[in-house]
Image 1 (cartoon, one colour):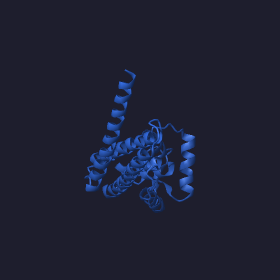
Image 2 (tube, one colour):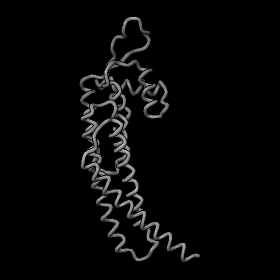
Image 3 (cartoon, one colour):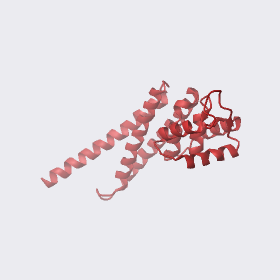
Image 4 (cartoon, helix red, strand yellow):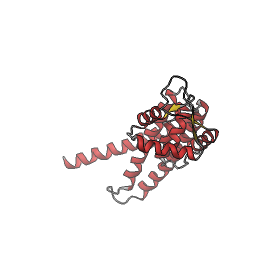
Amino acid sequence: MFRFHILGLLRRGEPLHGYALMKEYNRRTNRDYGAGYFYRQLGELMTEGLVRQVPNPLGTDPRRLSYEITSSGRESFEEWFEDIPRDAMGDRDKIARAMLFADVEPERASRLLALWQRDLLEHAKSLERDLQYARAKRRTPTEILPMLIRRELFRVAADLEFLQEVAESLNVASSEQTDNAIDSSNVAIQHAAKQQSTKAARKKRRTS
């Protein structure tokens, strides 16, 4: 994901010198890449024609080379950004894009949010069906599958809340689809939590 984060930072506007670009990248990603690794990767982007060096403004340190994104780099970034994995489990790729929401046009971020939310809604509905089937087929109270499905439902609910927070922070209005997704998932989560609470109470009564 390194290349696309660099391209995302450069497409915001003015060129950046390498050190400033490295510091901003490390700050955004909570990493601590050294100059050697960073400049090697930056060099590969230049070789591929995605980034290029530009003259420094007058009066600046000539040792600090500045870089800007090329039209090919911009096209490469935009193609990657909107080609979000349609697998609801593809968290790593989606989060990589979410970290750049503030650096892209609001419409572009909004489209991606809506797509991500729709995928989560479909995943939640599938999990609800799986949970009903697993409960119907369960032979003993200790079977693990229903518990695993409930665990995944909790994760989906957390993801939906995260996306809602992101939308609010970017001043992107929540769509009706988003609200439905959150409502649907919350119903499933509340039901799962109630089932878990009832099960715990029964166990407590048996051991008391």
